[in-house]
Amino acid sequence: MIRYTLQRLVQSLIVILAVVTVVFLLVRLSGNPAQVLAPLGATHADIVAIGDRLGLQHPLYVQYLTFLSQIVRGDFGTSYGFQAPVVQLLATALPYTAELAFVAFAFASIVGVSLGTISAVKSGTWIDGVARFIGLIGQSVPVFWLGIVFVLVFAVKLRLLPAFGAGGPEHLILPALALSLRPMASITRLSRSATLEALRADYTLFERSKGVKQSVLMRHLLRNMSLPVITLTGIQLADLLSGSVVIETLFGWPGMGLLAIQAINLRDYTVVQGVVTVDTIIVVLMNLLVDLSYGWLDPRVRRRVFA
Image 1: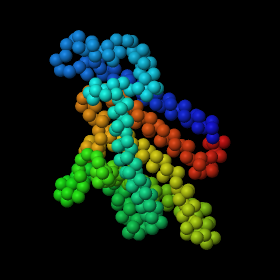
Image 2: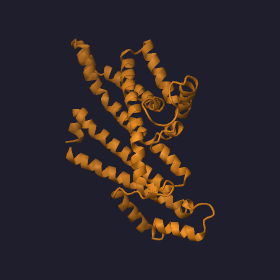
Image 3: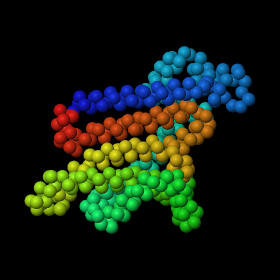
């Protein structure tokens, strides 16, 4: 268990280092960052002064080592567009993204697992048909289109909910619902297929032949179908935490996605580097937690992998 955990930690650190390196190189390969940050009409002396403040006068490997040492210390530099430390901007935006992502994830996972399980148990009935239709629609409808429809219907026409900004719980409903539809559809479809596979397994048929109670059977069933579902839900949560750019921009939600778009518009590459690095760490850690959860849920995996 300890050896496997250490191996996965090392692999996660390598992935984070690789992504951070790619981001660093892309910024430099796309041109002189000082020229990008310089305002219109800036003189050559102004561009040189900006480059000196960024440390661009040093060789590339020195800039890279300095960049890595700053990240290890939690220092992502200073934003020239927002005139504030990048860490401060990230610390302000991340709680909003986490709030939105966890609410959307809770709704998507609870509804998705419940709907998928019921659909499998009631396979061939109208309930199964409705669940499969919801799963198909959820994965087919573009998120931005769904968000626009929510704004037009619930905010503009019915005037029930606010369309933009953050504040009370009412501001969270529309973006969370729009963000949760796609992961809910994916979880519904996978839960249905995993439950059907477990229902057709030999151990399920054996328990039914022995007359095991339905509640006991469902408990065993849920545990055996949980591995693929947990894998998907972990990936979905990581995506929600790192990939809510469209919804945050559409609803004016002041999270990491909106911060990234604003930084791109301001050509503030230091903030973009910080957002990408934090998103990478979130995705890698979520995948690590999913991998480690396998041994706790399934004794077969624990004996084979964690031995």
